[in-house]
Image (cartoon, rainbow, N blue to C red; front, side):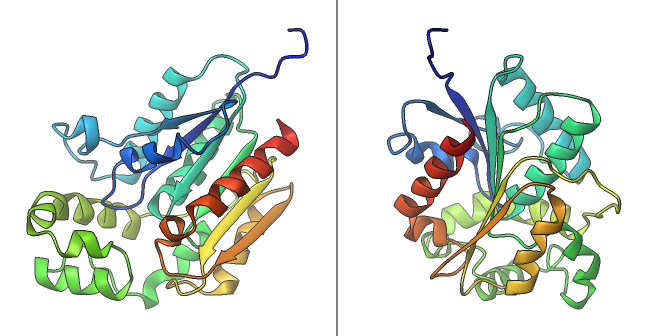
Length: 243
């Protein structure tokens, strides 16, 4: 190999109501030795004509098959998920471990509390079954959608069914105790004014046997838009430690 480093693939999973195409703008910022690979869920982006997932595990299986199709044996890779995507990233790792596949070098969990916190989500109302107007109001409260989306009636009409389906998956997600602890370093990113508490974010550390870095940004749920250059810098510095 003459000392050459292999290109590392960065698989990115979208937030509720979003498409993996959201991450395409990252490509011009990432180093050449990192290849961005968006993991698209059915019902959005290039897969818009496909039916939306109603079941969380079906979506995990879909992402798993997509990732394996993109990956060569022993090829180094990392996974980044924002919000709902972070939860999918965690469960994707579980499925990869269970099936004895090559595991990621690094995991990035953004805008989401630790997965076991969902066990205690009964104190938070479920919103996926609300009428459209009430659902939009709740999304505003949670900073769960961008202002650009709220100002565009065509976007609302097109993507509200996607958002509703995604919230159904997240709100009916069941964390299973005694999961595999990740053996790679993990990095947790969160916004200082997001809906989750500092304790809920830091609780990710119990899910790895390796290091856990928690980095907070000023902002709400979509802090990754406001601080894109810093997020990319963190990805670079985190991956290059072990790449």
